[in-house]
Image (cartoon, rainbow, N blue to C red; front, side, top):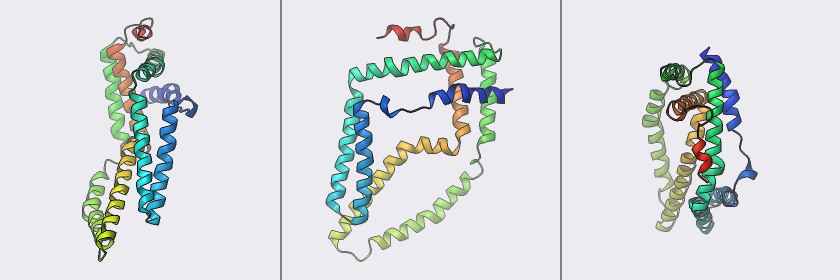
Length: 231
């Protein structure tokens, strides 16, 4: 029965919340996205061509895009708009849909012990879906004893027998490349993890939604009603 509840949760709640619309983005968000894509592509192209000025100019585009995102998103009016138009209504809708789903399975949403039992079952399912559990040690060993020595040798050859100016140029290109890769990995690490283990991601969402019901839900007429007055 838990499996059926979980699948209903994925279809009735998660799939409805996973849609993304470019037209719903604010102008500063669209500008950031466009500049970030263009800047990243230009850095890669200029790095392959060895055009230092182009790399620095492309890095400036990324920096300006980041400033636009930070300044646009940190504005007080924008923060209030996000709270009132996105976070608040989405949270209220999701909680009400979650309560409706649980009640369709004759689960008492005010019975914390019963909700805890569902959380325990979900955590057991997490362990079953963790396909990478047995490979983490192997990957760690491969990275430590094979990949790192190979990268060290390649870097030594990359900087071998070159003039000081070329050495500095290559070092700057390498630093900028690693910086961009680091930013991309940080930005998409959650997405990569979700791609590798989508079931674990969904189970954790289920656990989080049930915990929210335990803490915040009181009855179907008053749940999150305070959000409607905070405008």
